[in-house]
Length: 319
Ligand code: HPA
Ligand code: ZN
Image (tube, rainbow, N blue to C red; front, side):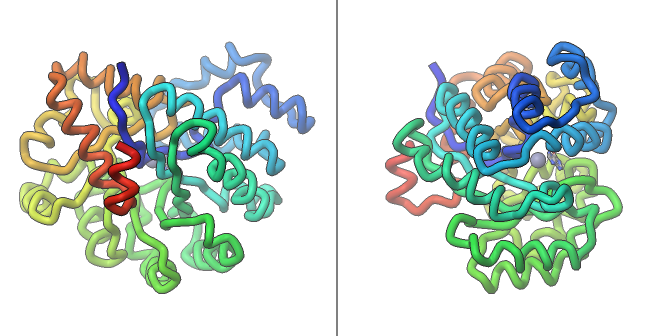
């Protein structure tokens, strides 16, 4: 039985399964440089974040219409629901689509169509988090926020993703200030491949409420103390960390030690089509690899609701 849980670190483009990629490629007349799903799956061997991102962005070429985005999100929500997800806060990368000539409205309206019927069809409440690509310019992020203005009723928060090292949070100070002024909440990827200093900067300069990944905080005891004291949630993604070689093996993942240190840890799938499992699978994998008992798993599930952008009534209903 899957525990009821919230998923807080999930890139919708990272839920594009090979079968759907080929179906959409055929529908949209897009040529994929792979003969079939089998051959595509053999490309899912990554050395680091960048080698994953290269394939992640390339495969998005198949996503073109509102229907495509609606179908992608609906497929994720069905899978997530089957693994106990009751609430999902879903990232999307508008710049990865607008750069290919797909308007932001197509993306948001398509995703929005699946999300708005999700409580009814899947029993999963949802929010949408718009991410800026940190390896693109600050100006491009500002232009993206501007382009998103007609769709803000569908968007809860902003986030920051893509290649981390060399692109510190401070680069996006202005766009986060502007997003805050528009009433959007704030999260950011930090400390996945980047140093603990990026986690501090995300908190101090961008004013984020949660840290996505945050894995490398363990290198900085003072930072850990602060994250514990302030109950800053970390949206950890253990299978992603193994596949992108941030940790050697799942058995070596610091999740258990991080929980013991008092950090508000959550467990998430990140890009489940690429990293070998949805969030229920991920709970299962860490349970086995780290020997977590049922009480620990319940704590992780409870943390996911505490860390979610839900008010108390919504939280009670979702649990
Ligand atoms: N890190 C940074 N950017 C991303 C990721 C990730 O794990 N997944 C999709 N975009
Ligand atoms: Zn991520």
